[in-house]
Length: 170
Image (cartoon, rainbow, N blue to C red; front, side):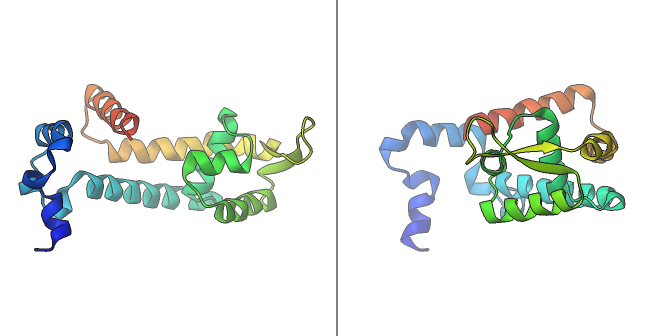
């Protein structure tokens, strides 16, 4: 076993990490953690399956899951610039520019110069983008309902709260 691996084992954590070691022990049994069942792996697989299912459902509209996220964020008017979208979605600026180019070509959004600062390019949905969003949202909700089949309402709420706590800890 390498030194790096040995240093990461729970019993070899330095004493300065005592609280972390305790929290990790309480939250998860690290010694019996199979790679295919660890938290990061499971979250990654769920994200990939969710994206794949939404992509399939939205294919009829020639929209991807990533494009749907951008359109939905613009509906909510939370980010209004490409850089804000990048920060919110952990996207590379180049990839975001290409995605915005595709959505603009489809006439679903447009770029506008900010009246307050001409260097800033604002994004907004077109009428066509606003009109198609409810159908895209319905597809997304259908996928979520399918993936959460068999879960009670309280289990879904609990899952959401647990994931929010994971995000709050990051």
